[in-house]
Image 1 (cartoon, rainbow, N blue to C red):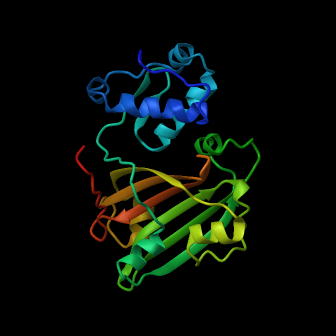
Image 2 (image 1 turned 90 degrees about the vertical axis):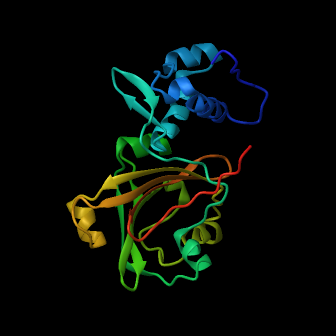
Image 3 (image 1 turned 180 degrees about the vertical axis):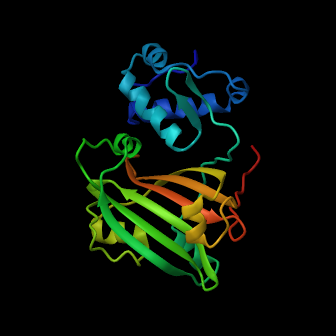
Length: 244
């Protein structure tokens, strides 16, 4: 932490600089082994910035499941999950197209809801503002393999009347002039509850690959908060990592 400094002349926003610093801390052996993260007040004073700026950066890493924050205890590096920042990412539609796999939408449900506190903080929206919630059950002819839940920032301009059968990110760019640039993801293994088991045609307690994704525009502003629940017996997530 001693070597970290803020460059106030940099075009990068302060919270992005802090986020990069925290990502570096996460990789250090002492924090991987359970050492408590410096608290936000200490980081803010050390860097000469506001606590809100530090909180914004920390929130993103909590959303990505890289950090776990417990009230009255502190913040630690999350354990028992595999997380990476991918060099290339795309929509589920394009993922399937590239593999030559024919898939279908089993159900598509759109609603306008009040977001929970996590999403409200991520999007930086006030109380009483609703967001678009998109739920899609997708899969192959043999049955569903993934259940997606997406929440969209009100600034996207999306409504309940959109045609959500189209590739989502193409729709945002062509119809709403919003370009997606960065996907920040967390991946973990969970067990299916009764609701997920029924949707994915599996047994309660079966393993599921859970992916949490925060999609941002070129200004690093979150525009989508996405939860994906994949059948573990039908989907494998592979990552290529080059040695330094």
